Length: 385
Image 1: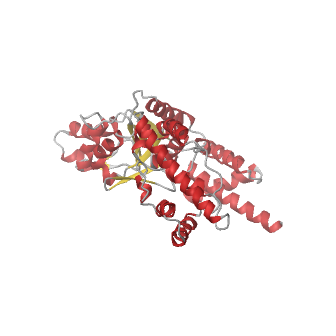
Image 2: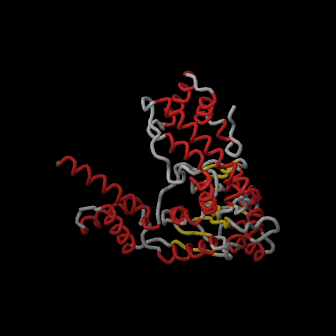
Image 3: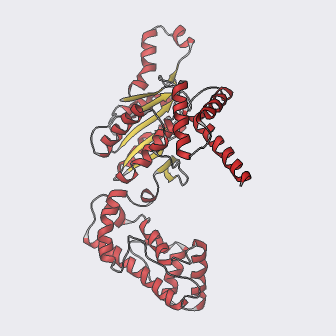
């Protein structure tokens, strides 16, 4: 029975398992089982590409070693042999089909008729993009000790975010330091709701994906797992933003101490390939109350302790609220992007009404207004047509 040595996970994937079973024993029921799996994958018009994708995104000893720059001729040779086996099986299946049940189609760009050369090229690919899910996805979620990909992460780009140029420049420069292996700072992005803090973080992750940047979201309820997450990411040869959204704590919260240690190089906690980026609606993350001041004998010491957490972020960036001129500037740029034909004077009047009815001006309000205006304009054009 044919078994893959390096790509051993593919032995258990139904499509490749049935393909290899047919390769070993080409009888009708094996072929039918293979076809059934192929149709489930939607690969009936592109078998070779479907198999190539499974190989490319597989996490295995070769892809992990190549990503870390530690591949060897033995791993490369074993990988190439497995790839050759899979494509040979695909060719046999195509011959058996005679073009009646599926089409093998073209190979994807990473695979040719020479698996040895493919393996050599893929070493560079994995070195740049990582391995397994890190090749395919840019955003992940850490939960219950596992790092899982977010399949529908926001596909937002920096060009989609209007104004706030200095804020974006500061964040981008810090991320470029991380990517270059230079000292990079943990970041706190704070400001009113809807000013684009979270969108900027996701846009940065998308913008620098090809340079090896990934984002892992950690909920504030999972803060005690931050050291474990850094340890796991330390073994991956990529750069990571550990993203904590809407961060706020109380002084007595045990997560307060854990986060402080992680932000300021406690031994075994600070990672070389990670930075923490938190967003908050307040500059001082730790909530304080009148009783904090009234009941504390050492009032100054209490206040300093509450401020110490936010001070441990090396880079603090304020996303300030937009005034009328800034708000309308964003509206105008977004309208240009989607080709709105509404006269600008009328558009600005409606945008102001929208902001007032929604409780204030912000980039989020501008985006919501433009989406609504664009939908209304498209419906009107469809009726006129």
